[in-house]
Image (cartoon, rainbow, N blue to C red; front, side, top):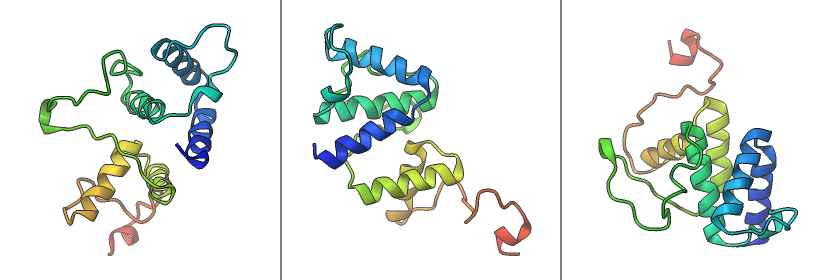
Length: 145
């Protein structure tokens, strides 16, 4: 991974609530067999598989079951899940990541939900959720009246 990607991951982990960060650290140490005597895992986050692990943790955290997916072999292709949903692990450039984060923050969406919304729009599909230009504006003006 590039230095910029690693720095972005460090910022993301640093912004996590303390309880989630502690859970992440425990799971990361367990999954990647980081010895207890190693004081910090920050310098251990250097490879794509570490980023993939963080992505799965984030997805599970947003869904309320942090790391239940990471306990199985997340690197293997997963079969089609229930309700026609599929999981994609993708690497995006920083400009795309910033757009996804911005949409997520503006509309209180998970990163997965924001990315899904943008993918649908980019593919010429109708969005699942109609998002107004300003999430805090619920007046009729925001709906074009």
